[in-house]
Length: 324
Ligand SMILES: Cc1ncc(C[n+]2csc(CCOP(=O)(O)OP(=O)(O)O)c2C)c(N)n1
Image 1 (spheres, rainbow, N blue to C red):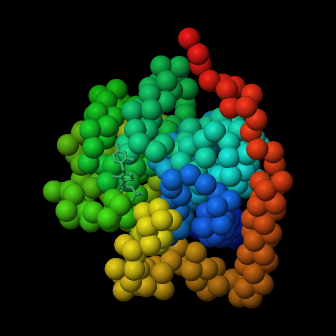
Image 2 (cartoon, rainbow, N blue to C red):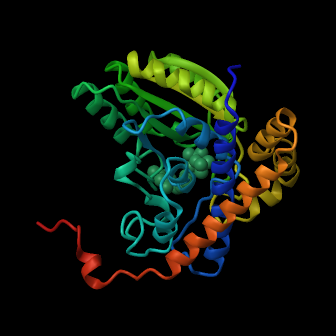
């Protein structure tokens, strides 16, 4: 394993804590009906996948995901204020409040969203990657994929085309073992999802421990460099969903309380990195506590910013709408 600077590890710690606290607050705000909409899908438990993978990208590279997107936006460096404002449908949100939780995006960050249709963003990822080859840029695309999404038609078409054209895309399956309430064993004939790479004729980067941010960074950075020069790669990151499918789904994790407990107590991504840091650097606890405090303050600032932001007007509503 390469050696990482203390600052790098602390930055990954900061990002994961920020995501966890931001989303915990979103869960409360949803119950208070300050965040509305049919669903709110939290990234809690998955943080190391997003943070480790996004850290491998340069500013000109591209990123796309499904509806568990708030954490990815924060990892990409989108400020918490416009992210929280978007969650509340305010004009100061990343998309002027029109996207909401499931369609967070930021053009300035080459973060193309946030998609609610399962697998619907995968052809877009192929298209963004094709644009890079066509325009002869050196940029690469990361596309996150749920294990459930890996069983729909978009997955097949998108991965196959990316292999035919040797496109610069890293496909990362976030395997949390469940799609809504359906376990992977009931949905996939091949439960080692990275093996599908072979069927498409693309590079198989294998399975990575998605709770270990350093391991994710190492695997994905190799995959990104391969994709940049040669063609598509498939990575499978094993992770766990702490909060049910969406915040309205409280029953799934209750039914699997023992399994959840095991992941939270022994495989939590923030605690794993905390252990690495405290073992390596004596007396670092104070620095970690200060980071946690700053993240909590940033979350509260984002809530105040969003609550005090204006609601869209009728003109805002019909603005950016294409009418023939
Ligand atoms: C095309 C389509 N079919 C079904 C749904 C309903 N749906 C929403 S999320 C989901 C499960 C997806 O699971 P997975 O891809 O593993 O992602 P995870 O929620 O675990 O992150 C389903 C079936 C949808 N949104 N779009």
